[in-house]
Image 1 (spheres, rainbow, N blue to C red):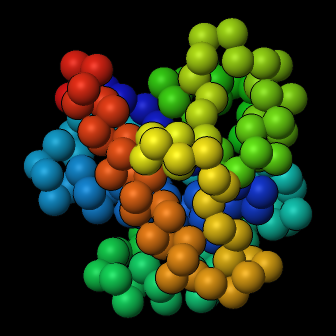
Image 2: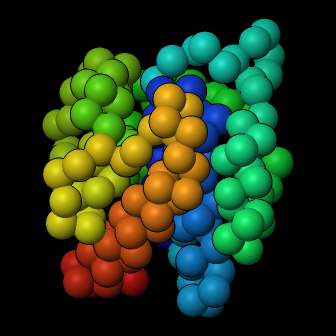
Length: 158
């Protein structure tokens, strides 16, 4: 079982988009049973009381526009325990990586990565919360997720 946690600042745009995109990719390939895929936030800004906010409507709309089902999802915060529970913790940008390492207490096992690393790029995933460019974020995330699957295959994990 390959356990992947996608992480962004609020867990309402990029990381749930990545979660839904990768779930769709592995389902279409017939390998969904080999994965646990989730997402979380580095902040608590979108979490109120016992629950978090749902996927931001423009992010959900972009997924639907691309034919990707958007499962019910509510923002949660990354925890120190998640480091032990997941094989890969994948952030959307450099600030996410710094905050992920702070929350998890470091990256002693090399589990923390930036998503576009898997596509051979050093860029951050475009943040649509500020840019409004949900299509650009989708394209970045899909490229990173495809690269992630290729990485797992190359390394004998699929």
